[in-house]
Image 1 (cartoon, one colour):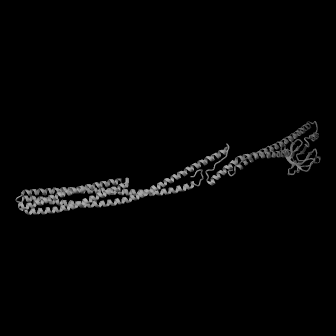
Image 2: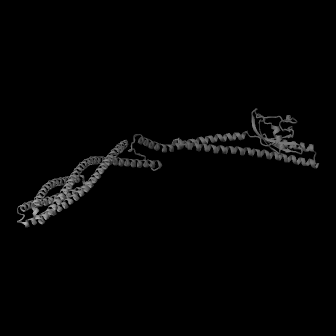
Length: 544
């Protein structure tokens, strides 16, 4: 059914209607024919039953002795011979052995055995009638020629009823070819009526089908044109108020919605393409910035390594300076002890004064070496300050990611300033120490020449030596402070290195993420290009 067109379906409805009309009419005609045949059967059955009543009355008279059996039978035959109906209707009598007892128009058959008499279809006419009679009566249909007509056999219905007291079979029959003639005449009339109705229905159905299929064909062509050319500008121009024009308006609304949706999608694709281009540009910038950040981080790491090396050098020099200071302290203590011995034993003053002079001279030499070390420490502190300044500049260039590194760099620079201040204090202390040494030397020399005359100078020299010892102890404390500062700088340097490594890792992650964004942006850009290519295949009112 789904393979049939609408025109074919409408035609099928008309055909079904005509077939239904023909079927109903045919059934009505068949029922009418059956009713006519049934009416004929009833008619001959009533006639035979009437004849049977007549024979029964005569039989009863013979039984009462009013007449003899032979007379009763003869009167019955005479009465039945006189009982005619219709044009050629008559009665016949057989016995139970199919022998003709009476025939009103074919006397030559009387007394003959007709059990083998057949019609053109092989029906045993008399034998079947006798058989029906033996069963209480019944109808037999057969074909037989009409009296006074040609040899053509016609259909005929016979009814047989037994009269058992005499062993008779009472029979009569009617030709029913007129029933078939009436039936076929009715069929002919019915065919004419059906043909007329078919013509009228065909005209009406053609008009109705045309009013349906023509606009549907128009819509179909428009649908096919839109599908074939991907043309969303196709619109239905059907007029009227019916289901088909409603379908056309729905088609127009659908095409409008498609066109608006496709236009919106195309505009969104253009905007997405613009945003993807911006994203790709931004990712390129991020990749470049992360690469530069990695390079800057490498430079800062190199500076930190150099700074660490400088700190190690300073730490080594500080340890050396501490060792020298310890030696100075020991020598100062030794000088003080010597001065004590000088006071207690003036006799040995000359020798001990000479020894004190040598010790003080050696102390002066160590002080000069300490000044050299302090100069180196001061240079390293200045270099550290410069490195910290460079690190702060690099951190500022790194932006938010270098903020933590800037804090560490600033702390390193503060430590460098503290180191510089400490070295200046050490230098000042050493200068005072050397001044004391020179004074001590002077005192010792004076003591050697005037030991006996200036005992008070010996006490002064002793006091100076004790002050030198105290200065040495102060110097040791300062050096230990410098060592602690260097240790703090080492810790800060390690923290700085950790922060730099963190920045380097972040830069690497940013570079990798930016590269992923670049790849995704290119993929999205390719997809947008394919999408725009697909959308551009459709034809719309305005350019996409």
